[in-house]
Image (cartoon, rainbow, N blue to C red):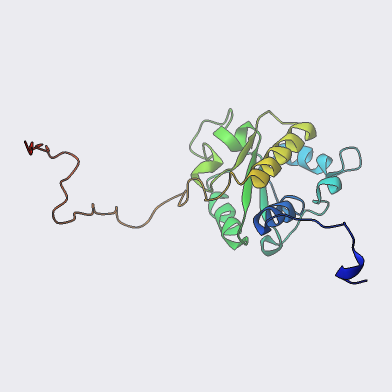
Amino acid sequence: MGLEDLSHNFLTGNIENLVRWARRNSVWPATFGLACCAIEMMSAGAGDYDLARFGMEVFRASPRQADLMVVAGRVSQKMAPVLRQVYDQMMEPKWVISMGVCASTGGLFNNYAIVQGVDQIVPVDVYAPGCPPGPETLMHAILTLHEQIRTGAITRRKGEGAGIQLSESPKPLIKRGVPSPSASVKIVSTK
């Protein structure tokens, strides 16, 4: 059947919306379950909640096959470099959901061993609150992420360069003839 046989069945749109639609409906999560929130994340993929209807039926074990990281549970200082390495191995575009109060803020573990928020290690797109958040909360976070992908609210990475910076602090750029913000500017009247 060629295009000449189609009398009125045409679909029009721009390529950007088509790419957003494809990305939204084929998000493949990488598991990063660290504590009790991981049990809730696993139950969200089970038959009662069925993440397959969102195109994410298989949690990927390889970060090279995933574009969504669900950080479920508390992140220890020893696990933080591993989390960042897995994030860096994921292909762009990539997204992060922080699941649970421990991943989001450190939770009740306010000590030296636990990272006080996974956003210090990787940029987070959606936070799923709760201790532990149920599968419904994770699904709501996934739908929120889908809406952000559909509307294009995620066009650049928030908090790019999050984590530990080992480079020197950038030096201010000074251009000739351009006054610095702290310099006073004198307005001269032409009258």
